[in-house]
Image (cartoon, rainbow, N blue to C red):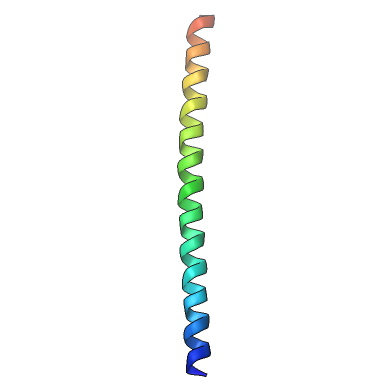
Length: 49
């Protein structure tokens, strides 16, 4: 029983770590994408005006 509890705890920790790293990766990707989009928008706005 103790081995099963340790195994499940390890799996939970692995899932939590994977989820957090996935959220951080997606957050960085969204951050970079928003910067690129805003930079392109400002560049186009300057050309128009």
